Structure formats: structure tokens, C-alpha cells
Length: 361
Image 1 (cartoon, helix red, strand yellow):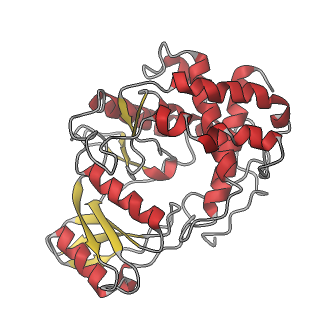
Image 2 (tube, one colour):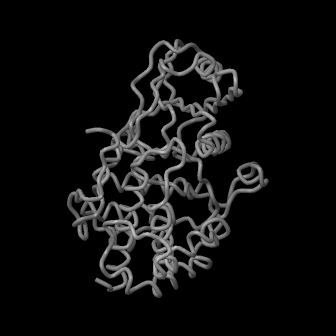
């Protein structure tokens, strides 16, 4: 399959509400520069960050949406690392890599994340027209948990519990870096974001294009959806440092030392402070598409125990609004077209679950 040949007209497999949901193969959403094609100064910067020579490189990963170089590298000292490099024409990518390096270098060891190895910058003019950012983490050998099933979700749920325990309250050091000297909060940076709060009114007024594959009932429920979006200002209060971009292609399921499987979370560049349950709940609409009984998980998980149903729905509605706001937008430089189909898919999956939870079906 061509990594960019994703179509909103291809139905997703299985699961309730899956008919005509925009489909994305998350294993093939990006075309990336292989290691041997990186400029010499960038390769040298990666080697310095690793502290050892590179003796072999795997083909680039084809998941994700950034378009930066991303490969497992085999080092002369026997280690395997995962190296990502992006150049300055894609400022979105550079900022993501800077932030990921900051977060990985400060995460507690109990968080299910790859260990931090190093970072580097290459100035513009040294490696061509643009400067570069490099971030290197420990290599992790695992599989993406798709299609979702009970075993995969159980491993991810356990990792969400471990992450929440390690990141509540926000550990010292995580909240004192960055240009603003603070971590984002989900209320300030998501619930208050004007482009998210304004997405549904813009759709209702015809000022924003409604992307293909959305449910027929959407326009009739705009007011109720907007009420939930507004409720997110209350629902997203919390004291946990949350991943905030936890998707199947940012998760690796690996063999656990004592048998069974465990999950490792990667791509830590959207860290924000909020409730402990948001990362896990954000996975459930896509697991539902694959036939998992996600309502049973909500009923029994310690993460959602005692959380008001309206608060869960407010988070689901906010993510749907975010996706509806972004899916019709032009791509940023270096972005891959699959991101827009992914956003249309997420909007539909989240809206379908919300409709089922609230009796709108």
C-alpha cells in the first residue's frame, strides 16, 4: 500500500458504528527520509547524541504524521536506539522534537516510556538551507496495538495506571521548563482554545467545511455538543501530567519480563496537566470500532471510577470538535495528507461513541 493512499471512502473494519467511517492504515501514514540520505552533519549530530558509531540502520518507520526522519539505529556498542531528525522548514516538527527531548529527559523511571538517550541541533547553513533538531531514545521492539482487542487494551490500561501514578502530582522538574516556564494545562490550552470552542458554531454557520464521513445527526445536535465542549472547562481540571496524544501508533506492546505483554508510550511532545483518566478514555472510541466493549472498561477501570459521565462526554466532545476544526485545514509544511483523514476518522469515531452513550442513536 502506498503510505499516502488513505481514503475517507474506505470503511473501517468491524465494530459498532463503523460503516463509512474514514479509514486509515496507521502502519503506513508517512514517507520518511532514510538514515543514509540524511546530511552528513545531521548524521554526525546523531552519533554524538548516541555516544557511539552507527553500524546499521533499519528502514524508516512509516507510521506517524510528521514526515521527519525516524529509524532504529544499531550502534557499535551493541545498543539499539530510535533516532528522529527534522529540519527547519517544518517548525511544527522542530518544536515537537524539542519538547519531546525535554519531556523524555525529565520523566520518572516508572513511566512506561523509552529511556532518553540524547538530543542535538544542527544550525542552518551547516546541513543545507535549514537547521535540524535531533532526539534519540532507547530502541523498543514491539507491535502497534491494532486492531484493538481485550488483551491489547488490558496492557495499555495497565500502562495508563502506571503513568498516572508516576505523574500525579506533576513531578518536580516537569513543570518548570519551556518558553513559558510552565507545562500546558488541558483547561487553558485545550478547553479554552478558541479554534476548538468555535468549531461547532462555525460548522453550524457554514463558516467551516464539514469533512466527509460524519454522522447524519451531527447538525441536529450542535447545541448539545457545544454544551459539552463548554463543560470541558470543568471536566478537565486535574493534577496529572498527561501524554495527550495517546493513539495506537504512539504505543508499542512488548513482551513483559515475567511473561505476558506490557505497553510503552512514545512521542511525548504534547504533555499537559489534566485528569488521570483522559489518556485512557481517548483510546476507547477507536477500540470500540474494532469491537471491544469499551463501556465495560469504563465501568470497571479505577481510572474512571467516580468520574461523572458528563465529564467523560465533555472530553469526547472536545476531541471531536478539535478534529472537526482541523480536518478541513491545509497541511503545514512537511505534514502528511493522512493526518487529515485521521482527524476525520477520529471525529466520526468519537461522535459515534458519544451518540451511543447519550442515547442519540
